[in-house]
Image (cartoon, rainbow, N blue to C red):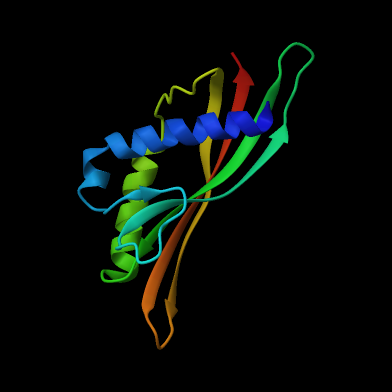
Length: 136
């Protein structure tokens, strides 16, 4: 149940992000796993962790997951602006998660870091969320 809940949640998050015009105007794509040579800026789904959260009467789980902003040209400022758009799209959004009731979705932390190696300069903006879901 738990792993499937994470899958359903990712589908709902993807749909919300893809439907947001402000985000779509700033990125090239949203990936589960970016292909080699993907053009920045883009979003990708990062790590996810699922833990059971059952009650006496209901099966549930918590899902911790990351949305990652990748940016090369615009640097940290553009990455942070896109991060703000992502959080605005998910904050207080009544996501419809197939087969589950989404009880809560909250931002746990956000960070932006830059890798200035000789080969490239790439900014990673990472938003970490936690969701509580119960079986519908």
